[in-house]
Image (cartoon, rainbow, N blue to C red; front, side, top):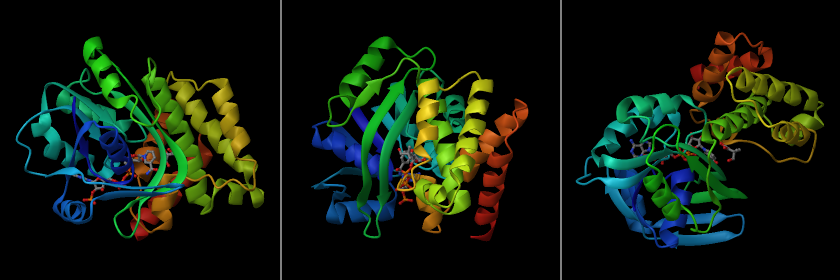
Length: 303
Ligand SMILES: NC(=O)C1=CN([C@@H]2O[C@H](COP(=O)(O)OP(=O)(O)OC[C@H]3O[C@@H](n4cnc5c(N)ncnc54)[C@H](OP(=O)(O)O)[C@@H]3O)[C@@H](O)[C@H]2O)C=CC1
Ligand SMILES: CC(C)(CO)C(=O)C(=O)O
């Protein structure tokens, strides 16, 4: 299957490079500045014990002349609408679209444009960022993905997708409960991301300052929203998250915290604001989530 990766940033750059290294047919759809850099210097991945460069196949937005089998959407939430316009010409009748985005709201946007049978659920777990030289920097060893059908995707096509994304040097799981997986990831990202951004420190720094109970209470609030929405988190996973916030040495943080620390725009509305809105609709009290959301709104409005 021919793969088009939308964006060659922290997640798309890493997984696209892995897939290309494993011999898959990968093309990156990028904007002109990124294209120039990639053509000049290649796509380099480094950090956490790895260092490799690939010469990527690159298409600049506006240049798409044919459809692809798989589209991996790896833009941030704020860039989604424009990205959809840009990659739409690559979507044919059998194309599958797998988004990497955290949160859930993007699914409705993609479904509306392309139909839910073509839009898979997706979860990627990596710790990456784009460094000042435009390289993909791994800030931790985590690297895996899962994906799965939500409604009416052809099983044959799904199997082909799994054969393409699997066995490429990172764990890739075909999930039969991808909506629940996405909700569980959302609980993680909203609670760890909300806590670290509100407190301006890693999970360990918050614990060392006496905030472990605060972080655990935020996890409970986010998990309660998932439960009310019909996607209760597995008890063991919930308890693992809670246990993780008690370690003062924990370096845990999220991509939203890395964006905040660099003074960049964040996905706060997509990750926190949307969850808060759903909590209100479902009548779930979430005072800490509200606090984290407001603090990020202030950050965004004063950047
Ligand atoms: N980073 C991480 O560790 C993790 C991130 N995630 C999630 O993955 C999603 C993507 O995040 P991440 O990879 O970090 O984001 P990045 O900002 O690092 O990468 C996004 C890339 O998309 C490019 N882009 C944006 N719009 C377009 C467009 N219209 N056409 C082509 N390229 C475009 C940007 O290019 P340009 O340079 O031109 O702006 C940028 O390089 C987010 O929802 C995030 O929450 C999930 C797990 C871990
Ligand atoms: C779960 C985690 C922290 C790593 O994949 C993440 O999704 C993020 O940093 O955005």
